[in-house]
Amino acid sequence: MSEKVRKTIIAGNWKMNKLRNEAQELATAIVAGTKGRDNLPDILLCPPFTSLDIVVQTAKDSAIQVGAQNVEYHDAGAFTGEVSPPMLIDAGVTHVIIGHSERRQFFGETNQTVPLKVKAALAHKLTPIVCVGELLDERENDLTDPVVKRQVGAALNGLTEDEVKSVILAYEPVWAIGTGQVCESKEAARVVGLIRKTLTQFFQQDKDGPDMVPILYGGSMNAKNAEELLAQDEIDGGLIGGASLKADEFLEIVNHACKRPRLSAAKA
Ligand code: 13P
Image (cartoon, rainbow, N blue to C red; front, side, top):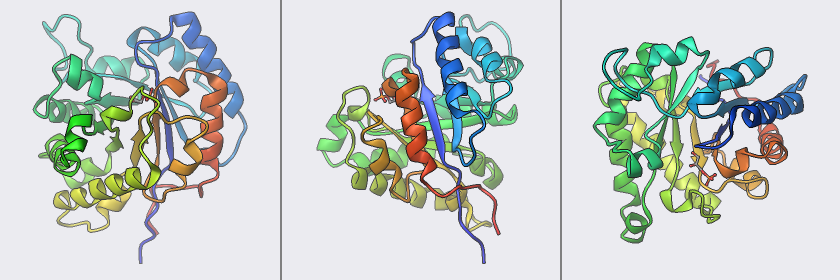
């Protein structure tokens, strides 16, 4: 008998916000608000590249981990403007967001480049947080399920079972991002459940594999709606944009996550 339990993760995606002194201030407040507390979820801060080092330094003696918002899949070379996995590791980063809808919409990220980045991140022991989600137009045309399935299938293509277990997924419906229009919690849980079912294709040996992959929700999550979203068994945490830029609000979301049973990815 195995107990299927997963980590709860609260991640702040700061996007292109915060100068270094502001990033330090925000990280300092979040570290202070979580210090010495038991039963916390995994907490992750994802500042822009320019503030990675200052946030890593600020979070040094805390439980908080630091992620980047993008990565290049080559290790080094003539790729002007890009940052590689070894560079992120060198900066003290443990996680990286890959395939965020803003990168898909504005910076040419595709179902072809996402898996290359996922593989490169895993090869360097960075944990990828892979974002998937449908556009409004796709939802209105009943294409949510096929779009999300295709994105998950593409992102994890060619990974071993152990590699898939090392990935975090995030369901971020694009129409809910930065709009204040949160996805209804039952519907978010339904799509997260669909993503979990989609994961079965990657597990021939370990039938419990899909239950070990954390799947987060993102899109206008805030201190008011987090409780209901995090009360859904399927949803393992949040990837939070706007509401992660204010320490008080982010800490309130962390508090809601604390009400979930302390979860670890360990199997009995
Ligand atoms: P908002 O929380 O601002 O809607 O952004 C969500 C998001 O894109 C997190 O990656």
